[in-house]
Amino acid sequence: MPLETLDDATLDGAAVAVRVDVNSPLEADGALADDARLQAHHDTLAEIAGRGGRVVVLAHQGRPGGDQFGRLRPHADRFDDLLDAPVSYLDATCNQQARDRVDALEAGEVLVLENTRFYSEEYMEFEPAAAGDTHLVTGLVPVLDCYVNDAFAAAHRSQPSLVGFPQHLPSYMGRVMEAEIDVLGNVDETPRPRVYLLGGAKVSDSIDVAWDVLESGMADSVLTTGVVGNVFLLADGVDVGDASSDFIYDQGYWDEIDRAADLLDAHGDAIRFPQDVAVERDGERHELGLNALPGREDEAAMDVGSETIRMYRDVLESAETVVLNGPAGVFEDSLFENGTRELYAAASNPTYSIVGGGDTAAAIRKFDLEGFDHLSTGGGACLQMLTNGELPAVEALRHAPAAREA
Image (cartoon, rainbow, N blue to C red; front, side, top):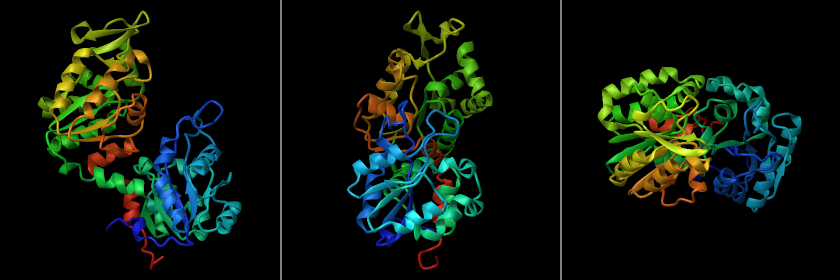
C-alpha cells in the first residue's frame, strides 16, 4: 500500500497527533544543549498548524535511569520560539487532563505532551496490534482525528507512540519522514562507484549493512572505522590490545567478530579496515601501525591513523556516491578528531553524499562541514533502512485505516 503524506490529509480543525524525535543532548540543569532535531521538525509542525490543525506533539527524551532522561518543558519552550503558532506544554500524556487539553485546543495551536517514556509501555517493543491496545494509545485516540509520524530517527522501533496510533487513525508521513524515505529508499539509483563509510559503535547494524550492500551489489567498497573498524581488525587476526578488546567484549560485540570474518571471506576485496590507529600516550596522540600493535596494555584505539586517512581519502575521492554513517573515532576529544574531520571532509566532495544521523551529524556540525546532499535525522533507522528498506513505524503507516474508514 502506498504511504500517504500531509498532501493527502485534511487538517483544518482536526486534532492531529504528531510524533517527532527531539531526543537531544541536555545541559546539567536540563536545558537543551542542541536544538538541531527540533529545527528539523519545524516545517512539519508549522504546516499542520498553518493549515488549521490542532497539533498534539508526542516525543521522548532520554532513557529511563539515564542522565538525559527528562521532561519536555524545555523542548516546548524552544518550539514556542521557533514556531509562529502558540505552543503550550502539559506534564501529562494520556490521562483525563491530557484529553481535556487536547479537546480545548483551538485551530493552529500546538500542545507538547509529556515525555512518552515516562510510561513503561513506551520503553517496550510490541507487535503493532498490541501497541494499539496500550494505555498510552487508547488514552489519547478518543480525542484525536489523525496521526502524523515525523520521527524517522525512531522509526526502527516498534513502540506504542510509533506503531500504535496507526492501528486506529488515518495516518500520514510528516515532511522529515517523507524526505528520508524518498532518499534512503532510492540509494540504488545514485551514481557509481558507491562507497559506504561505516564507523561508530553500532557494530551489528553496520555489519548488517555491509553484508546487505555487498551481497546485493549495491556497494563497490566498504570502509570501516571506529569500533566497527576495530572489530574487523580482530576478525583479520590483528591483536588490537586488551583495552580495545575489552571494550568490544563489554559491549556484547564478541560474536560480531565471527560475522566480520565471514564477511571478509566472502567480500574481502571490497572491504577496507584501518592500517594504523591512534592512542593516547603520555597525554598526546600517538599513532601505531598494525605491526606495532597491541601497544601498551592500557592503550585503546581511539581514532584511525594518518595512513588509514590517506588510503580512505583516495577511495572517497574516486567515488561518485558516498553513504556515511558513524565517526572514525572519539571525535569529541581534540586528540582524536583527525580521522572523523578529514574523512568527513573527503566524503562531502563526491557527486552525491548521504549522511546517517546521530553522532555523524553532530560531528559535521562540530567541524562546520558542508556539501552533503542529505543529512539523515536517524542513525539506527538510517542503517536499518539501508539494510532491508523496512522500518516498523513506516510499515504501520502503510497499513493505517484510510480517512473514510476511520
